[in-house]
Amino acid sequence: MDGKAIVLTNGLLDHYKAKTAHGLIRGTERYEIVGIIDHKHAGKDAGEVLDGKKRNIPVYASIETFKDESPVKADFLIVGIATKGGVLPEDMKPFIKSGIKAGLSIVSGLHEFLTENRDLVELAEVYNVDLIDVRKPKHNKELHFWTGKIAEVACPKIPVIGTDCNMGKRTTSRFINEAVSAVGLNAHMLYTGQTGWMQGGKYGFIFDSTLNDFISGEIEHAIVECYKNENPDVVFIEGQSSLQNPTGPCGSEFLISADADAVILQHAPTRVYFHGTEGYKRKIPTLEQEIALIEMYGVKTMAVTVNAENMTLEEARKYQKEKQETLGIPVILPLEDGVNTLANSIAELVANFKHPFKR
Image (cartoon, rainbow, N blue to C red; front, top):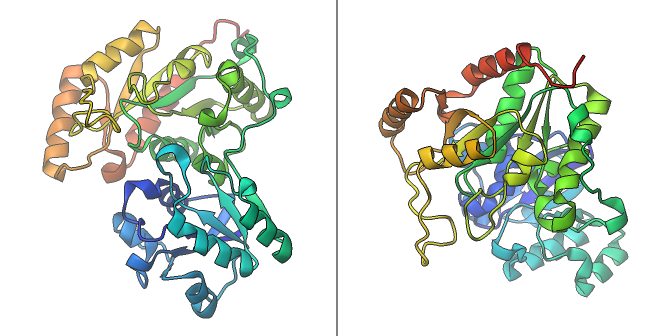
């Protein structure tokens, strides 16, 4: 573990833009989260704000309040939001400066890099702290082309992809990885975004800051290295955006370059338009259409996981039952019910897996 950290959300803790903070609240092996900085929810427990589950992570109004009231000290301040275009909001910059003056190293997963802000760099030098830009692109020499070595990976590779962005694919991936590990399998999850790295991901890369030429190779390299070093029974791959979202279509690489053996598909039934296209009114295809598209890539969807946003529990269960009957595959409510039943299906897939090159 890198150290103790507080997470900055500044009024957005209960908003989807704070998805980085949400992931860290739910769990991370890289940092110990000891507080959230959010004036709107000060005095509350962060877990209860997120999903009603107490996690003993207090919310403070400011960094100064944290210093005065917290029984523990922090080593890092993490920017806990993801904004459109990865821009650092102006109202967060004073908090970052306060963090630097408090002796905290700053961790950010935004596209606007801390290390390119002269004021922050100079201040960090004065207080001898680090500015860590998780999303900063690697040098070309550190990147990999696709080689075909993926054929050596003799275990199931399962991407968790979605029908849209911002719908909890990383959270579902982590839940499934934990559940499968709990039934005795050696499971590993590859991160493809900044939050996955912050949560302690050992293998992976940052998809949206990687040159397109190298995305296929980086996917393959991460899986191959994981397989060589960890000898996993199954590898899960965190998806990004969706196959058909025009603001950032991606996912075919997870199916083709990763040589996927099955797919878990996350879907939000109440969404009509792709996130970010509401004005353009680009409709999300039906679940059946998306499954058919995935099958055209040569991969079967083994289960559907449902993001029940804007649904009552009764509505979600009705949808779950109907789709399970019509699709003939498991339909799971991860946040409401967990994913243990899906873990059993994956264990069966692993037990019966036959790789074409495995002797």
